[in-house]
Length: 416
Image (cartoon, rainbow, N blue to C red; front, top):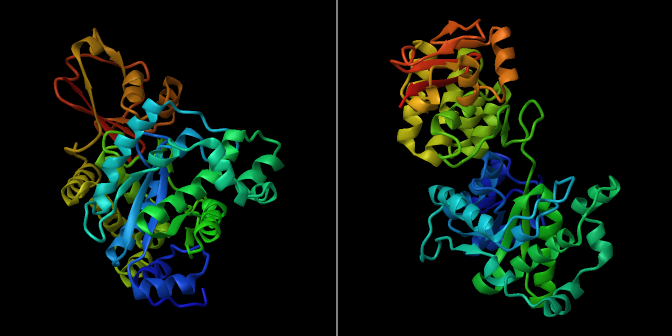
């Protein structure tokens, strides 16, 4: 980047690696130096929780507010009914309105950890685009908004081109998504004087179209800014683990498991992740990321504490660290491990160790659990587990037992 931003927001983003593209970086920077800018990011409601792949966008909103501007968190209650084709090889599943509303309730839990809501000048309004999209009259929308879009231009969008190039279906309802997202920007501009839309790099076409629509319809300037795709050192996309998505809601992933994911990132990712997902000064992020040997492990603990502290609170982060040190350094049980509680009915006359490994989430199937045992990857109370036919009865569960898969994944099993 040749231009060096002067505003606190863009300077912070630039130094931390948040910026992929911007419609007019210098002009946006000058706006931010001269006064408060309102910016938004939209979140579609496709699951009951966001995952760590969404954290970059949440941190963008947090930095916007921390540097003296106003963020808008836009819940996609309307657009989720259509489905965003960006980054997808196949048509999204159409969700019911009831499921979308349920997902909205789950996702709301996370935002208040990062962003201040209320009626103050820099407080974020929590907005749902169903407010205006549900009320649209289709013919009026086509006449007033659709006329500003050409099919030629829509076909050139990466999200459309990639599907067509692979000869994969793109439904008409998905094709409308780009118009609806552009209309969201126009509506937020009119309601909140919103001048900036942010999002991942896969949203660039949609964002530029929204800014262009505001210029065409309202004759005013608007800006778009995107973040790069964040990948791990192994090339995989952020947001997934071997066991599935790394969720942000406590009821879908415990604070200990969340902490543990960050503690186990690759050495090469530590510096980058500290810059993106914490508020530590950039110089400190660089220093910690450059450590090696045993010291890089302490840097990972710092990363895990900072990220978990933002989401779940500092007490939860400290408890997770204490549990991890108890488990890994002292061979103990720890108080905060994922726990499977069995009822007397669940246990019956006894339950196989294979079933327990599956029920506790350490393996996805009985076959996977047996392979884990056969390959000497399973442990029971820190002792090697070699007998896949072992049965666990009430006597064995007179106290909690600890199951382990490899060196880093553990669970407690207890009788309720």
